[in-house]
Amino acid sequence: MPTTTRIDATADERAAVRELLSAWPLAIADIPADADTTDLLPHTGGVPGGWVDADRRGISAGVLMYVHGGGFRFTNPDAERVLTYRLSRATGRPGLRVDFRLVPDHPFPAAIEDVTAAYRSLLDQGVPASRIILAGESSGGTLLLSSLLVLKEEGTALPGGAVAVGPLTDLTFSSPSMTANEGKDIISGVGDDSLAQDYLNGAAPDEAPQSPLFGDLRGLPPVLLAAGGDELMLDDARRFADAATAAGVDATLDIYEGMPHVFHAVILNEAIPQTGTTFLSRLSAWVDHLDSGA
Image: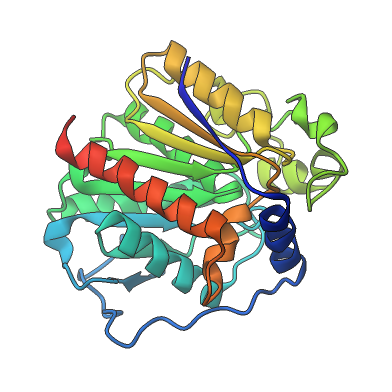
């Protein structure tokens, strides 16, 4: 079984998080002026993106490569820059935000091709694989897990770890929480819209890498999965953690009780609620554990 931790929150905290998320778009914080937003490497594999080095540690510290969510369709560069900043600070690495191609104009496997190309560019420019962390939420979590399978299959050195928050890992939408948490989450009808149709463009929903749950997970790096206890994708995260552990992967699952999908987006706020600070501190501790080699 994966290492599973349930993180509780008071009723007031749960209500505060939902109130913030319901006011989307959030009041996004500014990136501090002392953060480095210059290009830290000559290129990113032909894939657009942007750098945020929260603590100005430079490439020698490694790279946090961030893959944004948005249902494979949408992007919000302002929010993604702030998320990259927060993740950079929590992981002690400069962050690279990857602007992968979006559906419907660019269906599977375009986004995975972009994520893997950006990752390979880091290796080609001397960043050790062991010092790279991939992180993303929702469909971004899907893409980074899919990318791990592609990179493994081609024999590319894998990153030191991966962090997926509320990932969709089964595009057949058959996880029990898809129905059990309907009405509890802030999103609804995930399996009823055109998401899979637009993204898959005829590819099988029950095969990898597009549905990472169905892949050969042996040999993947340590993975941290986080999910809200009330979100539709809870069991997508849980099933992937179980399958990864069964395949010999060091998998950690954090369940934030009573929280909805992308609960961690509250870290976009200037004043971060307790749930957000808990998420960042647990992420930081997990990465420190990886870096220590323990």
